[in-house]
Length: 447
Ligand code: PHE
Image (cartoon, rainbow, N blue to C red; front, side):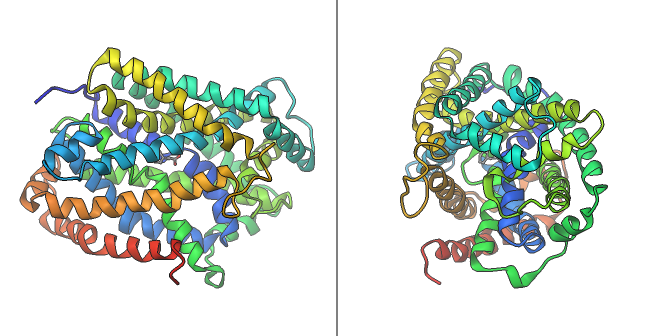
């Protein structure tokens, strides 16, 4: 078998995979989706899905990747030769491509915020003024396309350097720093006047607000934040040595992920209520809340800048994984090809992403099925393609991989207990496909 590049350490793998998982999903998308879906109940359903489906599926992707030790497409091909299952890797490539095309729009917004914070444009305003600054910024077509390009260029540069020198190196210092700053932000937010209402909003479930779309969104959110269903985790685990424990890594990543989502909720909602902002205001929520909170703190602007930098890195480490899966398939371990494809695909993603960027400006009134291009791409990825990919993975693993081999693969380096293994297998084989299928029927409007 051709030797692939490997992570330099277990920690490097965990932080890179957590880096892929923790990104805009946890920090930006979760608060605004929770805000639109009743808060606490959404959070609770999200946690249930993450533990019941997310964790088993993450482990399923890990076992595919490390068993095969190949890129996303060839992994399926080597486990199930002469079948069409490698199309599942292809589905992951297409989904990642589309995902990065709108993910980079938000990446660009963060860059703008960083510039504005540094130049002092974001200090001393009222929350209405912050909202106005934000609105003007993202509707400026040249600026928003320019920063989107910048965000993608950095992603291309890091991915073209490969695993150890690129992705792992950046993730290792950035993730711990993000935790620390998030804690500072939470402490500040929960001590604001009127914070209690926000804490209650996110921690106290109100089930009267739950509709089928709450459930669908919570499922989408849970797959989105864990980077599931696009074979990113297949790809990342293919670079992991056989001596590392997959279950322990998966539990750490899921734990970190839930923790960050909780911190995001606790950082944002107390502030939203304290400043009388609207929790259901959508994608702009975080961008309006952050400067408002930070500007009330002593030395706030420095914390603000630090937070934006980390937020940016969180977005980048996720973006790396999206580009990586596509590039690793096309370059097949060849460094020169890796560089070439990183550029070709990266620029392709930028071009495809332009209409999404303009959805907040000149294309705001252009809608398909009642959604702007940005919203449509987001909906297709989060609520259709990610669950579909996960559904197929939950069918693939029990169907095409021997149970005894799976047990061996998961046991390496961990001595996994049989009972836990059986639980995982049961959740993956019976619970995951049925639940995902039921929730997906909702997308098709069956209920
Ligand atoms: N998990 C990432 C985030 O929350 C998004 C992502 C999804 C990344 C799927 C890769 C694959 O921001």
